[in-house]
Figure 1 (cartoon, rainbow, N blue to C red):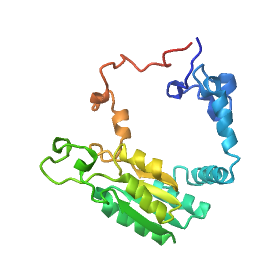
Figure 2 (cartoon, helix red, strand yellow; figure 1 turned 135 degrees about the vertical axis):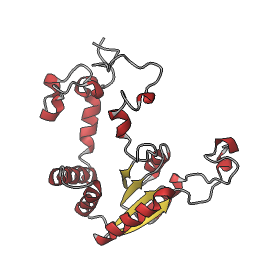
Figure 3 (cartoon, one colour; figure 1 turned 30 degrees about the vertical axis):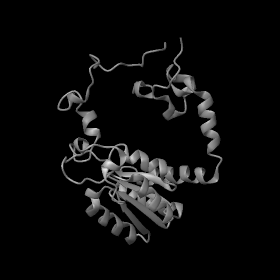
Figure 4 (spheres, rainbow, N blue to C red; figure 1 turned 90 degrees about the vertical axis):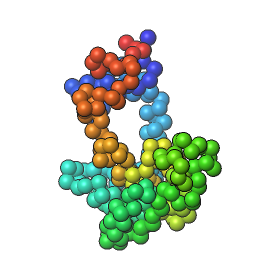
Length: 229
């Protein structure tokens, strides 16, 4: 039976036909061009929205101009300038406030207005959302809930047009993205073990970080997903 879901993770390096616009001709059976042509058409139609189209255009221009030259901080500034944004929000982990201060200064040096909200704002005890003392990072001590919904609400009400996530935890960042009205991008993805370089666990999945594997680790990485031909 044919594949039902896309499996781009399994596309061989020698294929990856979408780079050349040849998915329909050379894409494997699990290629989105084969498993989801209706979704691709629906997505293509969304670029007719003027704002969406502009974001796509300016993103591509920043990618081209800064390719392997600009840091992500520089890319954020360039994208915001191209979009004509004036107010940029920073949703920061409380542990990243010192970095948020530097980022705010960098943004302001480019003429932007920077607004920042730390994750612990609102002073919500973890017990208030049903967590037990044993479920705290440090049991026996007062511990406030990370509050990404409040971060989003504060930045929304401030009129931020672009929000930058700085080190929010897994799940907390998800809630922020869900509730942010402005466009949102990540500058730092938190990984306390890997100095905030989460990709390290994948690069070293078969050596130093073998522990990332679950109980069904394959003998070798599969070349295609199960469930199709």
